[in-house]
Image (tube, rainbow, N blue to C red):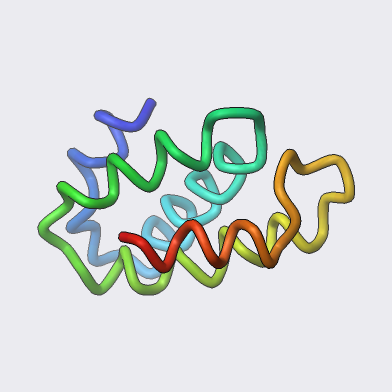
Length: 81
């Protein structure tokens, strides 16, 4: 899934861009997936979408009580990228 999203990281359609960010957030809350998403985002050239994705990932961890990490843990981890 992540390689497919990387292929469309330059999407200029607002709704398409929002969907990419949404999917990345949805992937990130499962065990081991935040690390995979973060590693993938490190290689993306579109830093604008990466920057917009990080707060959404933290928000997903806040909204989902069953997330593997707390929002604070997710934020701390994402600061490394």
